[in-house]
Length: 171
Image 1: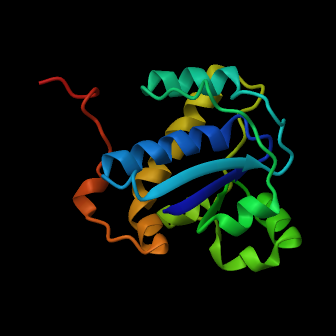
Image 2 (image 1 turned 45 degrees about the vertical axis):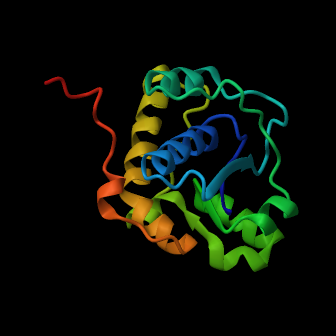
């Protein structure tokens, strides 16, 4: 079983949303039995659930993150991950400082989609900020799935990575 670790600051907004979206993309690609997705925070609010805004926007996408509990990034999570996806350069620097051996497997989530950008934290913002963050995460994950699979040594089939737009289209 391969492991992806998604990292943000408090592990209550961006990384739980990204974890759910990655799990959904892997399910749609038929790879959910080969890859486990976890999340953690560099300054986690340990034991806290996902933020209300994150729960709402994921529910609107048909994903339930109400069972999420924040956990602190630690050496065990870093060592057991095959791929670490961070939201910001500051998270990557924190990882390298504490676990320099993680250099080769740590990337900005945006890099999987061929970009190089931080993903803003919607924490404390209006629902629109959470919706914008969720949309950006979903887009980066959908476009980045072939790269994720390549980094994990899985054989991707490009047709499998099309976003599920069934509820958006009515024929």
